[in-house]
Length: 252
Image 1: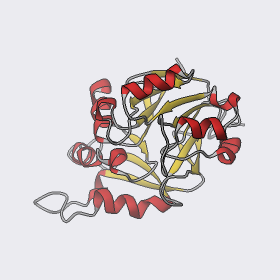
Image 2: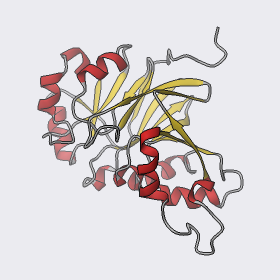
Image 3: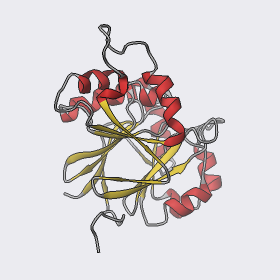
Image 4: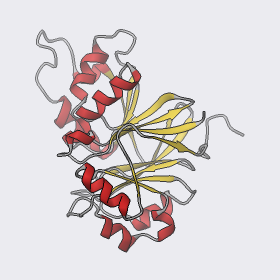
């Protein structure tokens, strides 16, 4: 079955009917690495898989991407088989922001005796990290403020931009191996998100043909983007990916 990308949600922060933008890379039909943990996205994840994520990468700390962490804490902390074993890969500059957003609350449990991060294995990451013996790459994106938003690459398979304005120079480097590119795109852009006119202006047609657009504002906007000839991500959609060409631990 190989590699797939399953979309838990594709909407912006207001489009709750589309789910908060969140996806899971699957390997041989099983969840391998989940990207972000929004509220609606986590609900979709649980409904499909029947259990909570075991490994996550966080793109940035806006609540539509991390609001599910409180539920994930409860699920993980009270499950002896999961407590301290749920890996959370976080770009190092995001660690203090994520802590303030989801973890910096007096006594995660009313009775005391617990720290929020006791439930997880927090792994700060830099330009790259290893998960399950496979190397993934991390790159900065353009969203609100420098060093607050990041994307992810599984070489040869998929690039997830996270929330971003156009990043042509970055994708020239991090999407140069034929990957599917899941890209932030609305019908109309704004100072922190891409619009379709922005992508058409900044990206060559060959790259746009590899894009799956998400983080749009409504089903109607998604239909309008599709009518312009673009591939639109839909909630629950599964996208086939090429086998990764990323370095693997122990490979000759």
